[in-house]
Amino acid sequence: MKSIQQRLLTSLLIGLPLLWVLTSGFIAWRLWHEIKEMNDTQITQVARYLIGVAPKEDDNKNDYEKDDSKSKKKRPAKIYNLNSKYLSGDLGNAKDDYMGFAIWNKDGRLLMADENGQSFAFLPDQHGFLEESDSAYQRLNPFSKRWRLFYVHDDHDSKHKGRVIAVGQNLDSRQEMIVSAMTVQVLPMLIGLLAFIGLVIWLIRRGFMPLTQISAELAQRQPQDDSPITADVPKEIQPLVTALNVLFVKVAETLAREQRFTADASHELRSPLAALKLQADLLQQQLLQLSDIEDDNQLFYHAQKISNGIERATHLVDQLLILAKIEPQQQLPPEQLEKPDWLILTDIVLSDVNRLGREKHIQLKRSVICDNPADILPILINPILFKLLIRNLLDNAIRYCPDGSLIELQLDTNAISVVDNGLGVEPEQLARLSERFYRPAGQSQLGSGLGLSIVNRIAELHGLTLIFANRLPPDIGFITSVILKK
Image (cartoon, rainbow, N blue to C red; front, side):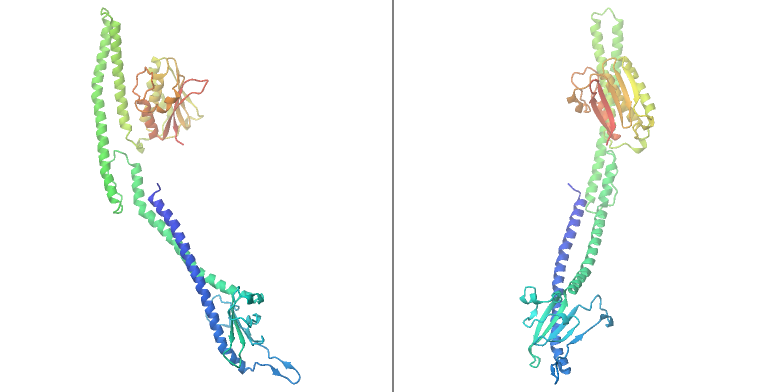
């Protein structure tokens, strides 16, 4: 399941832009519609003004055809030119060709127009706005088709009855104005959206920061640490923190009781086991001295079995005590870690197990696989625990290899391996070798089934992986390695 923070961020980062797109789309659609209505209203108002103004100007200027004794002439139409550079005020991005008008008499003669209107098409049968669906639209010249045209007839004045007035607005200028208006609306909203998204991300991360701090603290906490969490958290999380603090105390007390019990039990068992071992050894010596006792070989055999059982129990107690100490740890304290000298460390371990190897006539060998000993497994280790790890690997190999075998300790850049030429292990048993108290069937050697479990736990604490494998044919034997995790 995703984290609450990730789910919130995903939902908001998807939902907010989607909501913004829908809202902006609706606003743009309404804005487009309203501006078009406003411009159409403006056109009709201009047409209304022209109806009232144009006839008066026509009367004053006697804009009629006059007969001449020699020729018949028509008075030219009035063309009005207006340059915006001579206008004062804040005109913004308005252009000279934004609007235009034209006035014709009923015969189609142009009476009055501005610079744009003189190119408008005369449509005596058109009333109102000219739409593309109208049949008259097809009669427009290319210039007129680029304008939003409104036609009105002056039928109220009998003197000028039949006049046609056309008012137009440039479609490109209209669209540019609409786009500019929408940009003015949408751009600040977009900037606001981005700022709002940034604010949401910052607030969510800030709100979840106490949980992040608690998570980091819990990841570094040792199981036996019963100190309370002191992070400043919101009221909603405080009950959880309080419950965790109580749980820490309970867990620490439980682990302490288990460790005390293991230590006490180990201590109490060691003394009687040592006493029993001593008595068994004395019994063997006495049996060797009393040669006149019948069947003394049988008695010596049973005494040897008692001694072996005591030795196995002592070994088991030692292994249990080691496992109880390292099992609760999640990570090794930094102050216990150091960069090892692998040659010196392995010399010590090989010296410790040398006597056990000589008893079985087993040859112990160390090989450095890499060119430079300084490159061997470059990690920080707890020397005491790692000596125990290598010792257990060698001890396990010595115990289960036949007499006269060769055991090689190999040191490489990413692994430390113990390779023997013994009988190997059945493939189906490889996965279970690190289980506690597991011993393959048919074993006659003394053991507790905990040695490889301890090795596995120490390897995990050092960031290593314990791997078991049989040697590839034609070689025979077994390989145990601790390898750096990838």
